[in-house]
Image (cartoon, rainbow, N blue to C red; front, side, top):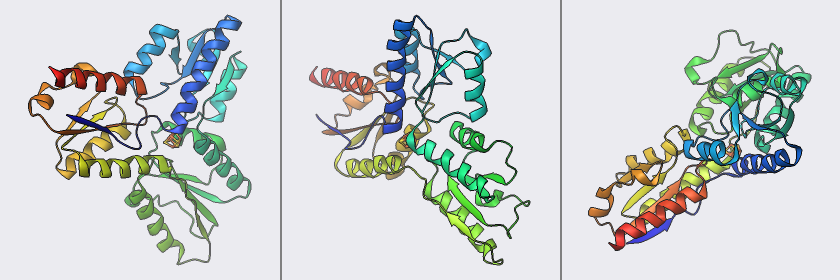
Length: 292
Ligand code: SF4
């Protein structure tokens, strides 16, 4: 049995930065004798979070009142400014693992708010990153989150100079449909609408690499947490293509069917929040079982 890894898989650069920020915080915490926390779950991978808790003593908290002050790591999605201030005021030291792309979106909305522009954010209003970007302009009245083209609010003023950006992991198709609809409405007035390219290429590159892999593999194994939207999307892509596909979050879920069906070539991919050690564990198990 051949095992081929996707050319682009596993941690994206933002997740890697946030994970390294936690490792640095653990070292610093030992030196200073301080507890280490993450503000919200660091990544969407329960096995990784369990390791952080059990082996490194890193606790997840959502507000400064939940624990005694220590080192608080901000995850890749970022946090609203008011939350950062609340942690600092309560005696925590912040270690910032916010992804550079999210920081850019926060800087952009601040700049546009200073210029008095109307701001649209295409994204999921419940997503942590959208909260963090909105939180960069808390109290600014001219900002709207739009998740679908049919949910464009009636309160938008089409006579105001405006700008649209998207959640970094938003679907390109949905973003395009939203701004096209806005362009139509703005074309009836003299006001301008600036469109910002803020979708992260890492998801797209991962999906393109998977399409390539699916073309040469007899079956695909997708590795990642079941709560990771990014991993689920990879699984669905392969399913839609008709190639046999399995989605496992740990080696204990490896289906013996996968082996009894004896595929010649198995392609492996992993979501942006899947640690490399988990991928290696699963590949090792696959090789062991196929040698039996
Ligand atoms: S997907 Fe892109 S924007 Fe999101 S954390 Fe990773 S690198 Fe950053």
